[in-house]
Length: 268
Length: 271
Figure 1 (cartoon, rainbow over the protein chains, first blue to last red):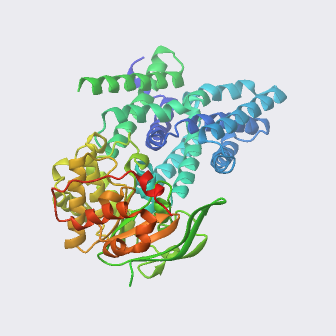
Figure 2 (figure 1 turned 180 degrees about the vertical axis):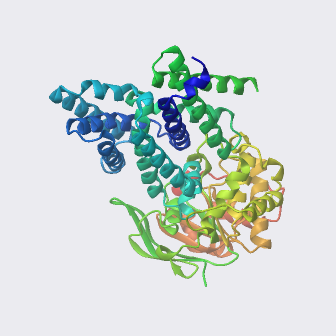
Figure 3 (figure 1 turned 60 degrees about the vertical axis):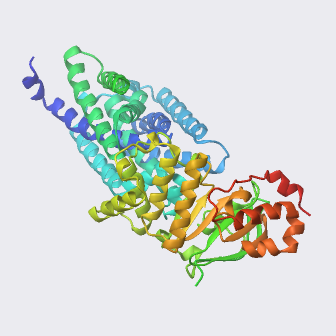
């Protein structure tokens, strides 16, 4: 099969369209998370999404309708636990993450019928993305990107120098809440692309690679988005032709880009 | 109208009292040294001004407006303690960092215009960092970074500048030229300056007024009054009072040798 006929498949077109939007959104948001030392919140929330998807499948509701509000609530809980329980953010992420996985496993064992469905969410299945999921991905991606656009300078300032940002009237606590809620949306979206276990890679690796070679913040975000887009489109293509799992291929391409960026930095 | 009017302010963290009954005023063109040992409440007082810690008792007014209702943050430029607040991995270039100083005069959604970029270029040229505009902030020397952060403070044309231990990251030569620059801004542009430091020996070379804190207000007024005060002589011991005043009187002598009295000595001489 050649590339032209490959691109004529409807399921490939859908995967490309949704993948392109999700990859750009992940990279843009991931840049802020990486710089704020919050990268692992995406990992914790993806584990929580596993539990939330299990709840959806158990009750026969479309899993994303359950996952979006539940994971958003979980992200807010992470902030509240950090604030109230005298623990650092990583510990509260650990708590919510563990509860998510444990809940998912218990529900899966209770049902006995949908384990196959549930496990497809562990590793992603973008080639089987449905039309409604493509629209949902577009809608949520555009929502997240629009919010990032309008809060760009607030996020920039609060990430670069939080103490200074406060003195210029920027509500840094509100920025934290916005960032965490957006992360929960993006995590749920990305589960379809790379799966629960690899979501954090999609948010961390493009940003980490871009940081090696960027010469300004705007260029860092732009480069990160390009890397992410390339990895997702190339990952879908290679996985199809080489008969490899798509999610894992995307992540490995991201890792290769990161290694090349490191090498470029060293050489230049 | 005072720029800042602090009346009987007390601040507590849980049950720990960080500041007790502080009153002072900052007027146009003032250059005030906020001095005191570590943990004396200097930074807490600044945080109280910015509304970042709750004030337990008393009132703070900024430009005649109660601090809680104050929104014109572009009138105040703040340089926090550098080492603790800046994200060292952040890939910002110098121009982007200076642009942050203009956010305080913008309402959401904050957008940067061509005019803003021109303003940034102007202030960069004024502070002689124009050639660094496209360089990454994290790759600059301590002295260069400090100048960029000063540009960030100045770009919004503030009427008050607050510096929190600005000399920590600087070598002696950079420190000297940095303070000269601040003094110049204070005199020529009439910008009021608050300089927070625990370095009692140095501040008098530049500041006209002294605010000495140690949870309570020990002294607030002109250096000349501090020097004449018998009460302060008793509190600090004549030797240390003399060192602070000696520095002050020699402010015009650029080759003057600077003493740095250990601040333990200050505490040791308290009554």
